[in-house]
Amino acid sequence: MKDIRIAPSLLSADFSCLGEEIRKIELAGADMVHIDVMDGQFVPNISIGPVVIKDIRKVTKLPLDVHLMIQKPLRYVDNFIQAGSDMITMHVETISERLYKRYVSDLKLQNIKFGISLNPDTPLKKIIPFLSMVDFVLVMSVNPGFSGQKFVPQVLPKIRRLRDIFKGDIAVDGGINHNTAKSVVKAGANILAAGSYIFNSADYKEAIGRLRECSKKDV
Ligand code: DX5
Ligand code: ZN
Image 1 (cartoon, rainbow, N blue to C red):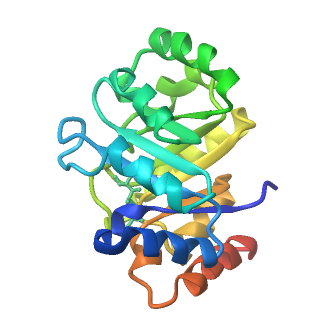
Image 2: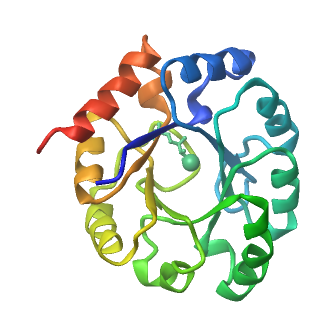
Image 3: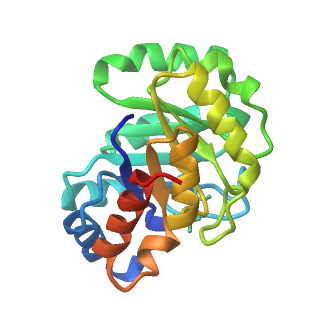
């Protein structure tokens, strides 16, 4: 089984002291920083863009895992790479296989890891043509737009089917806590993006530790 990696989602962090929050999750043992980019079009919320990511880059060496929830991601993706992203996820609902292929094949050289994401209602078959091009898949386990939503259990069979056909990393995003983490890891996921579970806890290290621990146990 692959090692479990924890990706705290900054959307639940206190943005008035973002640098401090990032230092805290780094010390608490986070494996990467999950950054949610929202445009108010693809999702009904607006968050942050490359300007903020450029400053985040200055305060941490952790990989920046940038989740683009935006229409027309190719219009902006270069800006996110220049800002210091290490991992870029686009949504299958926002890009064609042809355009994705053209873009990603050029950028493999730059050491960026590319992912494709799909919403809970999007069938797995939509991402099949992308699987040979991506390093990882980000399975949404809530409808994207907000943190603190309830995990959608219907995505579990999707993760299982994906694990059967895909050797790369499988990340799951939305409603992750010590209960849902167990089931998604058992289904085959190995990266857990978690916002409110970590940032709403009193002790980030304990919360990250709990996610790692429960993922190891048999259910
Ligand atoms: C939702 C975002 C998630 C979100 C997760 O659109 O992509 O990363 O912040 O938050 P929780 O873990 O609270 O569901
Ligand atoms: Zn996300």
